[in-house]
Length: 345
Image (cartoon, rainbow, N blue to C red; front, side, top):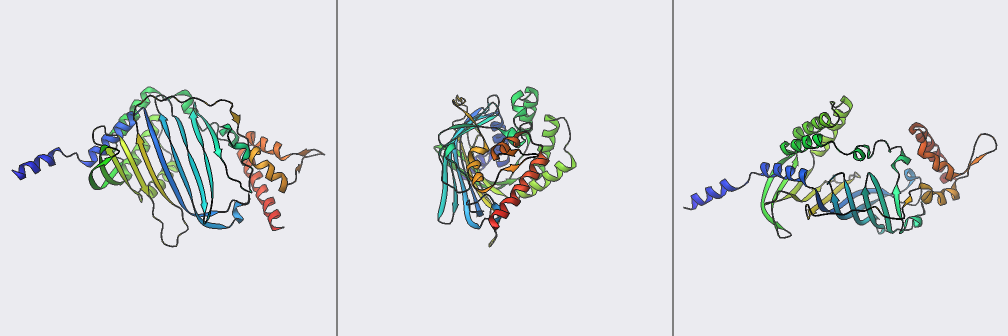
């Protein structure tokens, strides 16, 4: 009798690979959810006392990020997150508190708490909403272009089918059934399935851009896959709804290594509830001059232009928006050399 019961239980038990496949299919169709993200980066970091990071003293430290809020995938990506970021070096730390809103391919941010640092004046950022202009860094054409026009519905369905049939993970161990916030979940230890992920990116390029990956892109993908394959993580999947409920990934640092290592914990809750995300009012354009100008004016002279004109540092910063990337790189290199000369004197 006991043998019959054991066989019946075994027959009903879901195979881990099938559970993970159902999880990816469910997540591909999820419209909204609440996100809680905790990220820690640990290693050697520079002291934030000078703009010349290359000569800054490196100390053991960490960057800790904690964000939470709703994500809306109903049409295009939208989110509204609140949280903190801490920059810790030995016994000292800098902490930022604030909010992020991403809507209509535009990022808005507000800091409600800012630290005092010698390298920049952050006081102007406090309690004001800013709109981040990616175009100021030459990224305007690359970021958000697809989102503004929306994703073609036929392509979206093809991607969802591709996600549903791709085995992204290899199961290292089945840790059984757990309870997570009163929800019954499957608990697995997993790693990336390199061959399946490689195939997924190749087919995604063919669907979205109707082309094959270039040799350069394939080389970069192989490098990333090699790095990702070294990671092991744990996932918790809802037994009844198949949603990803929790993900934990941690990288290990070798003894005596200065290389960065990371801890990531992700929790998802409240799936498919109605979400309302609005653009903030009284938004200012983000201007690098608001942060760096006060300190630069104390350390750098204005640059003489051809003739008798003098170009102020503020005008120089404003010109970055329309500057050719090669020229911008040249200007940044010149600035770095000037900073080095000033620090040596």
